[in-house]
Length: 120
Image (cartoon, rainbow, N blue to C red; front, top):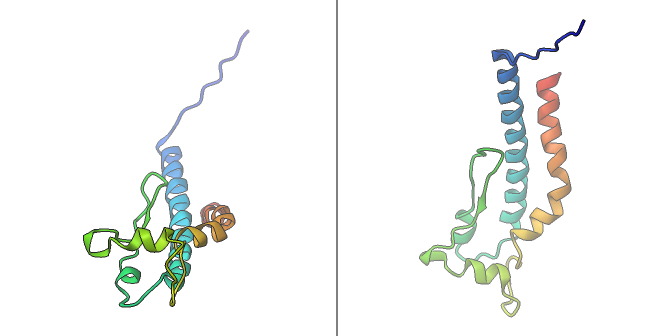
């Protein structure tokens, strides 16, 4: 006699899957806010327009963005970030990538903390 194994995905399983994804996204968002907070402290500033332009988008599909406005009004943002020749009297270059790399190891802990909350 052979026995069959049957796995049924229920609404509850789908709900748990959504909750896991939501909590993972929350962890990613908390990490991104931490990076943005550090970046705001070190971004070069004179008028504060570049600092105020920082935006962290809400997570979607486990992705988000940390963005400084580089539109026509603030087209100098990329030069300020990458420029080696310009002296930054208030702030520093690599004002977004440095905080990201400094805090990269914390991403897994931010996600784990949110998932632990869900599972406990």
